[in-house]
Length: 101
Image 1: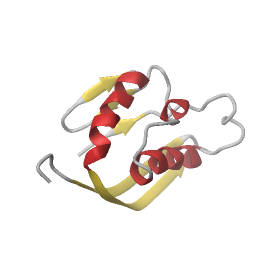
Image 2: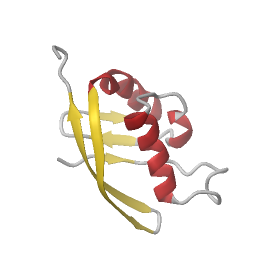
Image 3: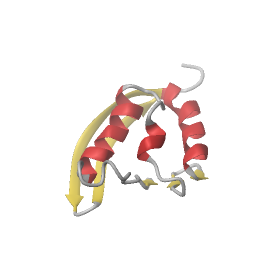
Image 4: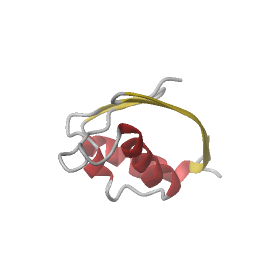
């Protein structure tokens, strides 16, 4: 499965945070806290998401998708992360529930 998400380096974060830190802020919000509040601050308006079953364009459309999707996150575990300049690769296990439980 290949999933790509483009995280925006905002003007305040550009000099204060490394790419890995920003990516982990994203994972903390979505996978640990299961919330979308504050997510827009980390996303570029013209971002795109490509997953195994769906695609979105734009931060608002992606956040709407997350609102629906986060309720099915049961657990996750980060396995490995690689950082090369502004690029970050995260490999993790994600356990999802089904609507029926």
